[in-house]
Length: 326
Image 1 (tube, rainbow, N blue to C red):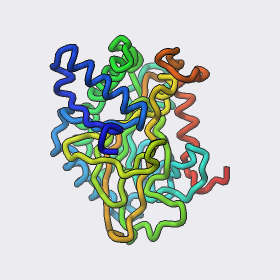
Image 2: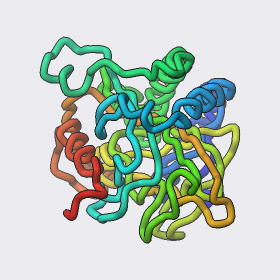
Image 3: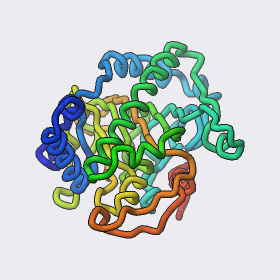
Image 4: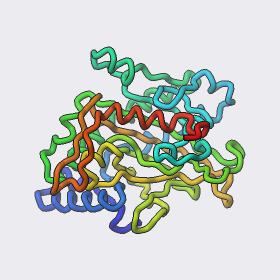
């Protein structure tokens, strides 16, 4: 898996190289997204001290007593604390499972568009935990970098398909996005995993691209491919992990696969392992029509979808999924 299926893409040569260098990079991206839907990206320009400081502040919040966190409790798709049992991501694939073994703090796009119905659903104000005021400036700086990087990645993806560079970014003038800090505590907090229970159950993401800053661990990220099944995801401390989501897969007519993944439960050999992931989910402008690219780029002609009707359906599927029997 650490070989050609999930390559390391250095954005430095991509930005500054000549046509041949860019073409080689684009070809590697195309191949990787056909096979696994994942990339490791270096040269991204994110100061490593920034996610480290975010993790430190986030851990201070997550380690608070449950009663101190409860006033911030929300449901999936809202802004605030997603407590134990709030999500069961496997339901997005129609696979019942116990709730995911994690907690999260979620943020989302909040700058209003001026369209009342859109703003009421997708651009509401974010919440911030008063107990860790240092989190706000750190996350705000990180989100600014993630937005710029995600647009750059969409430009790279367009060129990998032989399209105009702005083919996707013309639809991100005022996009929605989500940002989760996921806390994966050890068994002393979550208890032993139930059969079929994971820190995050198997699923694909829902949007265009996801940018992940993660910590390695025995109970960490796994990626699924048809060729290799489930394998531990490769890790490079200098790299961000990037995968495409369902909307991008549909947009490309399944030329590229949405990156299917899961996060393993706390491992028996390290039951107290604690990990924190920073996950930026990028989407597109509200209610963008997503229509599959035709052959020879696309492989399957999906029915067109409204991007945000699709996203809302997926978010509803994983909300409190462990309590449903569908």
